Amino acid sequence: MSVQEEIAKNFKYRNITVSGLPGSGSTTLLRMLKENDMLKFAGWRGFSGGEFMRSYAKEKGLFQEQGGLHHSATDYEDDFDRKVDYGMREKLQTESGWILESWLSGFMAQGVEGTLKILMVCSDKAVKVDRIVNRDAVTAEEAIKNMHDRYLNNLGKWSRMYKEEWDKWVVTSGKVKQSDPIDFWREDLYDIVIDTYSANQQEVLKIVLDAITK
Image 1 (cartoon, rainbow, N blue to C red):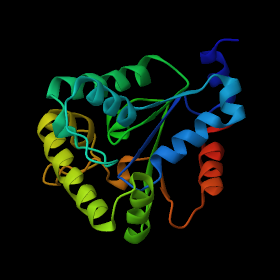
Image 2 (image 1 turned 90 degrees about the vertical axis):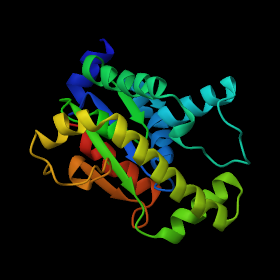
Image 3 (image 1 turned 180 degrees about the vertical axis):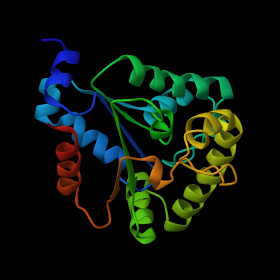
């Protein structure tokens, strides 16, 4: 049985996207899904857009790395960003068994049938900051500044780059009004919203597995 047939037989969705701002737990969820025996046996595989782009940036010397802090999308040329993002959308449209994790994977899945769009959030700012501090070995002040700057820089760049897509995929579909500001992480653009402050890792995994299995 092919991966496509296995997915169609046993799962409600062909693909999964996981999105979330820093400290929300999206990378942790991707790792748990990739390590899940049931999903591995069925042929599911995972891809992190953030990890891919960081590796590329280091290889090409596109930014000056400072400690363990992650950099913003403004370090990449628009064409490269678009190539990676649309590469994910093409996978979702034409293939099965993908778990795609990135800031924009859920947005790139708008209007694509058979994709479970998951938004990870953390309702406690202190917990988010603590996660970044532990992950990147930085001070709380550095973590807060990095989170704030990356959010503003990335939102500004992607709002400019994907204004046409926002209008076509989100506004025209009636999900938001033309006057609403662009917000790629609006909860109503997603099928499931998981708060990792109130749910532990195993509870989060169960929520997703329950959502995708028949």
